[in-house]
Length: 221
Image: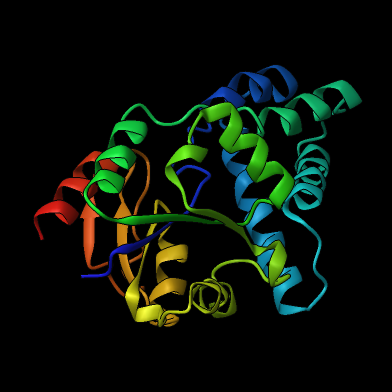
């Protein structure tokens, strides 16, 4: 079993729910957050395939503007800034710190791989208090290609001097798991509430309803 665990960050480790009140205030509907996040992911795929890289922060702002126009909402500069700054101040899901500590204390090596730019990643880890659990923090900024592009996963393997088959990607997104599998990684999927795994994608090796359940399976595999 791979002892190298690579973690996605947003939604996998960090809870996006603090963004909901800001979308409620700005758009009159907290569920607009889902529309925005899907637009953001669509943008990241587009700039990767067209080789026109912009960092995730810039794409997040652009996605907000697109959603505001579609919904005919006049988004103030303050509302826009508040949403984008809140991304840097997200709490971990309740079970995450203890689960990371258990895994690290059991001999697993922990790393991140996120679509967020490095500066945002550093701010997120500091605010959430999770940085101490990881040997290194990796961002797609280094490859200029967003997940699920296979180059992003292979880049981490190259930096660690291992094969992708020696890494396990852990994520709460089916597209991230699909990309990692395509790159040759082993995987673990966190089936958080509200998530549905696309039946057309290859399945993760391990699935759990939260990181605690995934960690338990890893420790007893």
